[in-house]
Amino acid sequence: MLKSFEKVQSVLPKRERNSMKGLIYYNGDFVGILEKNVVGNYVFQYDPVYYNNPELPPICLGLPKTKQLYYSPNLFPFFVGLLAEGINKDLQCHHLNIDEKDAFSRLLLTAADPRLVIGAVTVRPVNVINQG
Image (cartoon, rainbow, N blue to C red; front, side, top):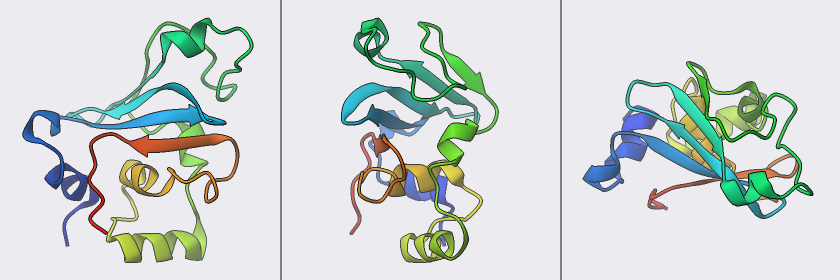
């Protein structure tokens, strides 16, 4: 069984294998990009169009709207909160062959469908080919 990061990396073009990225949407509006870089750190940045619109809220209190990048050695707690738990987590990990400890791969592979995610935020993987 491939580790989840390796599984996602294996379907990316070689130039994209240094990091994994997800496009963040709030009620269908593009918010910004979440990335796990090659050293395993997480980076989130609001898109300038979203940031500059005063009518659009921050995605959460822990990530207020700013032009600066957010950095973290761990996946931001808000995004962890989008993940399934318990038996649903077990089923997703088994069905998608994802390491249950790899929260970012789980996020990229399970949080794109607004019907399956609690709340207004969805995450769409960048350049990941569905292996269906």
